[in-house]
Length: 157
Image 1 (cartoon, rainbow, N blue to C red):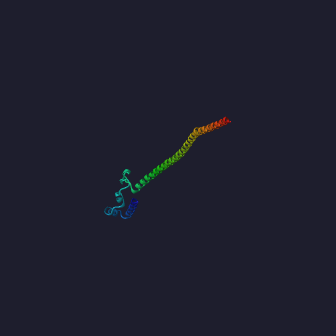
Image 2 (image 1 turned 90 degrees about the vertical axis):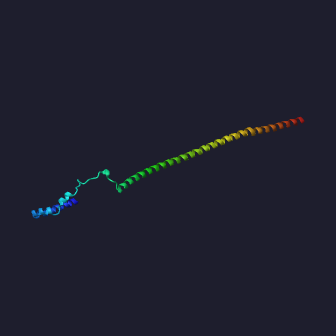
């Protein structure tokens, strides 16, 4: 924009010089202030201006902000992934615990029933072997007493 403005000034100065005397314009241009073209030639152009390589570019505050936003996004994503996997592991552990607990209760119930059956069988054998054998002895004794009593009565007759 500055270069365009200087060119316009140079064109205006040339046109005003052309309307004046050519001899006076030459004398005026050599002794007077420099024209726009001389000023323009002294300005560095875009081609002449030194350009920094992109590798030497220093990061601005916005660049650091963008880098931090990218890092924070990745951090949040990895944290979310970690939390989901931990929740999945925890829920599987809870399911496993309750499945184990239910199977443990079933095993305990089955072992209790087996113990009750063994104890019942043992008690049945004890009743059969001890109580009824004693009852058989009592019955035999009573029968023997009755038999002796009947024999005595018959002998007494």
